[in-house]
Length: 98
Image (cartoon, rainbow, N blue to C red; front, side):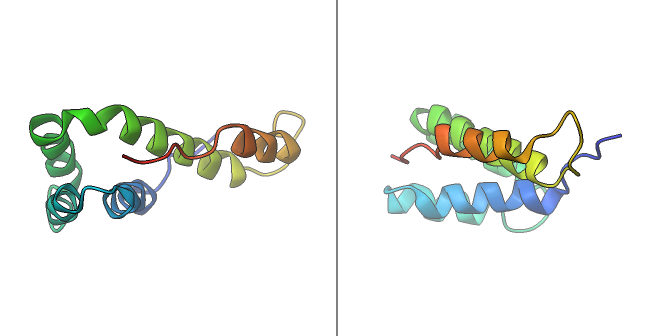
């Protein structure tokens, strides 16, 4: 059985995205959105309502990070080849953030 990623990994994806974008105002608003209870919902709402132009970059960035994080934590088996995971990470770098 593969366990889901812990919420702190998803939270860090949001924090990294907010910190990495070039629009400082948007970054500050997204950082504020993830403080406290309801961080995931507030982050999503802020993106959709205020910064929809950031959605494609955010989605690609966070999806790639989750795939690599999830696969890197799997034990070696006939179904998990860590060289393939490493190659995936190289072939799918985090996109440039706006």
